[in-house]
Length: 506
Ligand code: HEM
Ligand SMILES: *[C@@H]1O[C@H](CO)[C@@H](O)[C@H](O)[C@H]1NC(C)=O
Ligand SMILES: *[C@@H]1O[C@H](CO)[C@@H](O)[C@H](O)[C@H]1NC(C)=O
Image: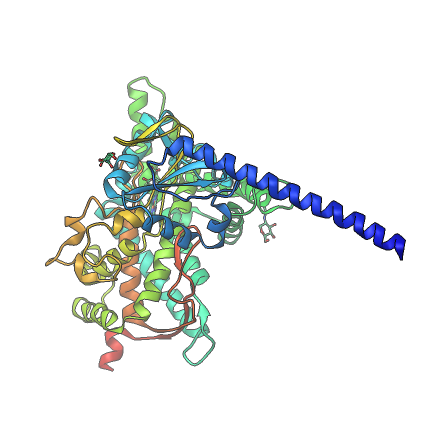
């Protein structure tokens, strides 16, 4: 007995000492962390009074990122505040004019996009979002023909056909009276298939394999940054090679197709191929090198950037619209009334018809304003960045403009979903154009913004006119989650097909 208690006593003592040591170490680390950040913000910038050593706000952020950034936003009366993410000094900018200034600056010597570490590994260093300067400008200029009225008109029947197919499928699989289904991944499938078809059309072969590999890439994106055979990141990198291979083949097919006399573009890639072949020819005539982005491999990379860029934000806003409308029968009825007026015989969509869907579009714009699907665009400062006359963020800071903050500035009752604010009478989208930036602003502004708005409008128009859906509420239904685009916490629905006007008159 005596031996045991001596042993226990000894062990207790050691454990107690170790605990005291750890507490002491943590206290010292906390004080050092406090002093380190105080030396940067000099108490001129609002921010937390205590941050965890090393990890900073990361632990709280991972638990509920949307709430974390919302707390931070509401805590920034001057339009900016500080925090620490992984010991990196971070400035969160919530005021529109500061966001504008941040977005306007871009380059290797100022600010560049800072993504999750897996981002560069999977998307490649040369992704359009990481580029800057003349090369980036020239690449963007080559997209001009991809989003004209003519091009958007060509994409419409594809969007329409797929929306009909998916709505019919949901009505069959998740009927009223049955078990409600979480819609997020089904909406994502609709959106991915639409992007593939609109961007690459029949030039993309092996659809099934392609989609599987593409999905592996998506999964790797937010997985642990561990590259080792078997990890999600490893799988993503292997899959990327196969995806790029398939896209290179699609690019080659598009080049051959568009080289035929009188060939008409049949997908977004064809429009781009036509521009690229003009650029290559003009360069040749001037005796210059063709643009770096014109070879098959670089074009394939860019098509992948398009697929990625068109995926998350669009899926998030489609899901948001589905959830929002299920809860607002009077607004949904106004969308339906507009459809009845514009398409008395369920006419197929045309570009002009979609332009006339004013109220439907207002609902879409208001959804993008209230919850900008990409709520922030983190940037790394490669040089000191002046925030205002009183404060300059040092080199190495993370600078994060908040699109949520900007999109709620100035608007009347900014936290309310109110599509009428976007109408002809109030025109808040124009009045607050500087604040209304769900697609960013400046040199990297979303290149697909008019296609995206069209896509959301078409979806809402079709789903309202041709389907009825009911959302099952949970205690969390009003919460928002960050994935890292903004989704409703849940969107559990059942569906029923509706014949549009044909049904109403039958
Ligand atoms: C609701 C849907 C969408 C939203 C909210 C959205 C939002 C954004 C935002 C905030 C940026 C970054 C802007 C910046 O850094 O200044 C961006 C970039 C981009 N988006 Fe979108 N986007 C959407 C859909 C699309 C679609 C459908 C496409 C393709 C057709 C697309 C293509 C791109 C590309 C290529 C970039 C990179 C531009 C560059 O770095 O120069 N996006 N988008
Ligand atoms: C992609 O994921 C699927 C399903 O987990 C797997 O069968 C396939 O081997 C993966 N592809 C690659 C290239 O890792
Ligand atoms: C800078 O600090 C001064 C003194 O505290 C204050 O009066 C002024 O409003 C500040 N400027 C800005 C842009 O916040």
